[in-house]
Every structure is written in structure tokens, then in C-alpha cells.
Amino acid sequence: MTTPDPERLRTLLSDVDFPCDRAELIRQATAHGADDSTLGHLGAIPDSTYPDLDAVTSACADVT
Image 1: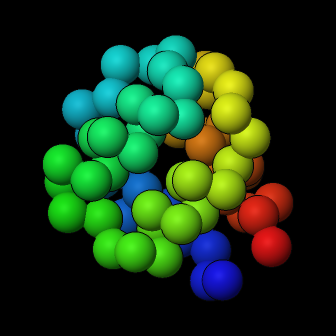
Image 2: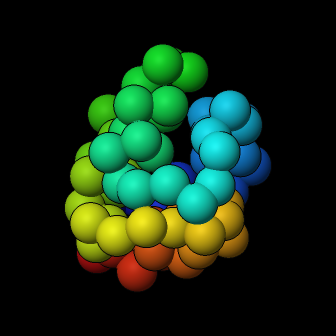
């Protein structure tokens, strides 16, 4: 699985009010037209609360 581009994540998650959980990240990414690969990465990150976009980006990079 290819790690999502951080700038693309920033665009997809621009309306997220941090901190937020994985489910909210997926809802927002879906609403902004995320592709299946990006949604797969977001779905594979730990079910946790993320304080900011940097934490989301790091979690996505850790998904293999």
C-alpha cells in the first residue's frame, strides 16, 4: 500500500476539527473524495484520537 501524499491528506482533511478519532477522519476524507488507497490507509491506522494532521500523517506512514 502506497503511503498517502501528505499534501493530499491536508486537502482531504481540511475541515477536520482536531483532536478527532479515526472514524471522523474517514468520514471527512470520504466527503472530500478520497480514493480507495487513502481510505484504506486511514482505516488501517490505530483506532485512536489524533491531536493534529501530523499525527495522522505519521500513523499513515506506519501502515504497511
